[in-house]
Length: 448
Image 1 (cartoon, one colour):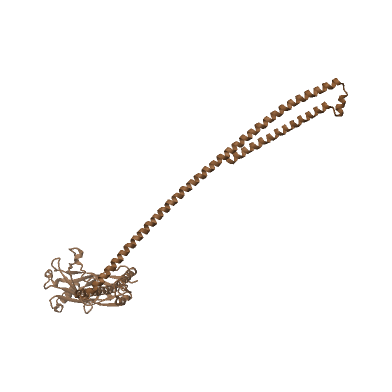
Image 2: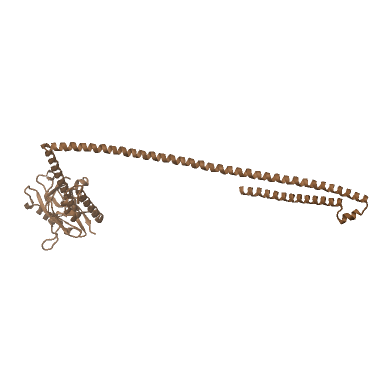
């Protein structure tokens, strides 16, 4: 818009200047015409030319009239030319005034534009100055923060110096006290006692770690390769290996075993006094099948054998469990619990007690069918049996976990029926017993 305005004003000035030039040229032509008229009039008055001489040949009266006529014509034409020249001069003045007005307008516009430019430039400079002030304020704040940091660091160094001086004084005091305590027998006694206690605690921790390793080997039915590192442990936290790192590695091995084999499955084995322990035949020596009554009679005869009585007078029946009774696709068979059932016609009330003793050598097979033998102290489980398949009380009363985690396969078991001094068994008639069954619940892992 500013460029368009400037172009239009300059165009008007150029047009007025052209008009002025035309009027000036016209004025110059009028001046030339007026000069020519004066010249012709002068010639006519002096009669110096042949025409003038011809005219001179006229009579004297006629010559005076001619000069008078020429003079009058010159005056009239001169007046007209003068009027025309005055009008042209007025036109030039008007055009020059218009040009001056336009030039003044352009000058005012240019000055106004420069003022606008100056105002915009001044605004920008003011904003730049304000921005510079903000930067200086930020620099002042940064310098203040740095000053605070330096002050804090200086205070910290002062505190550190105070601490070091205090430690030095304490060390000097301890050195003096240590020299004095060296001759104090109580200090030596306390120090020796602390060392002995620490050694005793460390040895106990090593024994527990060894026991934990054996539990891992027993549970997984495999040896732990890093067991020898346990005898190289000298410290709990430091050294290689340390006691903490050994236990952590053992835990990782146990978790890896669980990820590989999963959780064990629960199973049950039924051990019958008639079928599995006494193995009462189903046929006689001639091959004739025995009736159920005949088999029960043979069972009762075996129960009346005096050889079954222990030194305490308890009826003790030995038996064993073997690997052949287990699935060949499983391993790691360990007992969970045992239940007992007495089957008979005259067994008294709903209460009774049966003893199960495990005292032989245990055997556990691993996933590679390798056999691992274990010897545990003899342990007795006192079981509350149910009678003739009827459970009067809650199930957890009948299942006994006294032999939990022991090997299922064992070379020496004892089934004990105390009819001598077990009060709840006094109403049981051994001559009416048809069978005694043991329900052995155990866990195992399925081989991969």
